[in-house]
Image 1 (tube, rainbow, N blue to C red):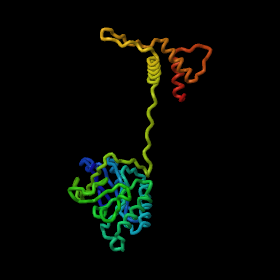
Image 2 (image 1 turned 90 degrees about the vertical axis):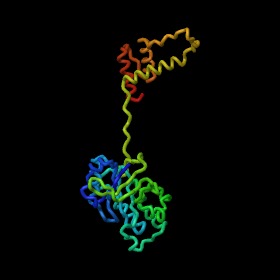
Image 3 (image 1 turned 90 degrees about the horizontal axis):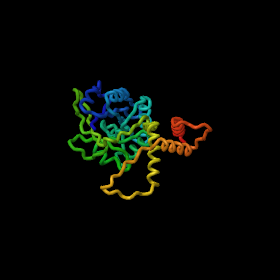
Image 4 (image 1 turned 60 degrees about the vertical axis):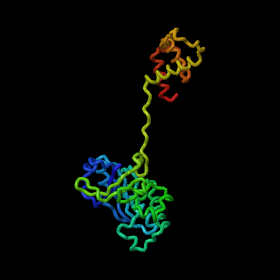
Length: 290
């Protein structure tokens, strides 16, 4: 699947053009840090959905400590909840230092520290599904992604993906309809968790059986039981044709219906019942779960 990631910097996105160009999904920025809100988040998700795309979200991190990351997670979750949008793809924790904010503020560039920050965000944004976004060098040097056990969205602007995680950002110069986007490839086409603020989509119950199918099942079961208890006949030879089994007679049907009524615990009445009344009683018993 092909996709883009967008933020407020992508102005007046032509979502119909993206869909026509074969784009299947969009990852929309919620914001950044502990207070930076992306004003286009809700509109981007809504318009992407209207165009037929599925959506995820990402939050750019300025966290210097795990406690900062926990606060960012709470802020990000609040943005999504207030927007009331459905996200079919994960929320991504963007852990890089593109503007060198971390480097300017004494950030501890160690594998254990960076991994603990990622874990704090993942733990605190639950129950929303969450993954980690980062460039290849950070995934190799600073993030113990195996310990995190989450989905990974890797960034490597190249013709080949050396990481091959869940998703790959392969360019920041994808041209569609006169606009420029970050281009992404989602490898796992079947991985589309239905998330509405952490709640899975309900499963629709199966349709009830029709009255005709109930009667047919009763007759089929009765015939199968009769065949199983009958005395085995001699194996026919090619010169001895076998007569087809006759359809159940009216008396046989009535006998089956009477037996079904007795097994269902129906009460006998003084006046005889017509076949139509018997069938109605059986169906009434089936509907009541007898």
